[in-house]
Length: 395
Image (tube, rainbow, N blue to C red; front, side):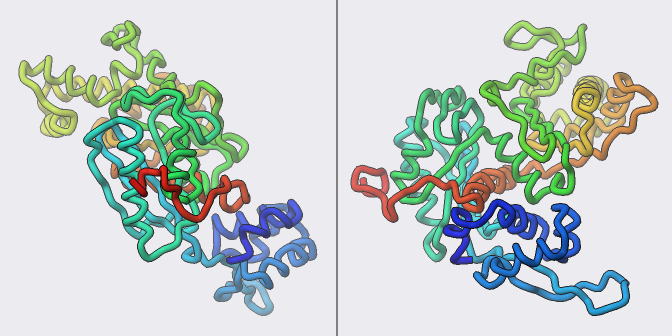
């Protein structure tokens, strides 16, 4: 694997898809690689043999597909030969994890944010990086953040932290001596699901996130769909119920007013006459409290209508529901299914709906994939091997 950084810059284009295919799906047979990439056996041999000789790929185990003849040798990568750090920055917390080349977490840490000033947060990031890299060389850092991001380097607007026009990637690279990339956290999570997660076999799938906000991610033709407005939270104002409550922007019955966890908690609290939290509201619905059940079912039906709209517009092969508020989809599953049925042609097939973990640590895998993808493609930003004196590490 030592050849990977130079190999990505020197090899013909045909080699990179083979290496990525083995990374994403290995151990994998040559026949499966050839089928997936539409390569002849001869072409695959010409491409893969140098990669094996250089140590990028290795032969592991054997596979017998039931046909007559010798079993085939499987190809794989040494996933533990490289290490990355993925971080999710929340309003009051940084969650950080060290992963291998496949985004598999080996250890993780979290730390409260006491001061939201960017310089203070970067010092915390550098400190967490030191802790996670004590016994492992880190090839890259990926950071997921809620908000508007440009070029995987600059935070244009992260309202929950009060940050604008901040070269976060550059400052973290300077503070740690490790190349760093950033992106909207939903983009990062969707990229993980595409490369290594539930959507890795799909050419087209959608991610819906629930929690303090409602998010939407889309993979189409095997690539993330994102533009300059990604990170504003546009799907939060998708109309779901013309008679529903108003959101802060004055939209009636939009996703923000119906699906956001604080909206749900507020509606249940108003109905009960006493304050309850989001998880408590879900618990009360499971106990068949009439007021809580009505609000949760309304939200579930709204979620179903949002999923129906996504299916009608993008025809995904799979829907992945994630985020801290993902439990809504389980508690209100009958109402969710009714909402889908309401807005779908009865001849249409609803794709599989997968509920991801609500654990925020899992979002670190998506952040790490930002760096993993750049590392494999040879596009990680250049950096010195150590932080400068001016960086927070030295202060």
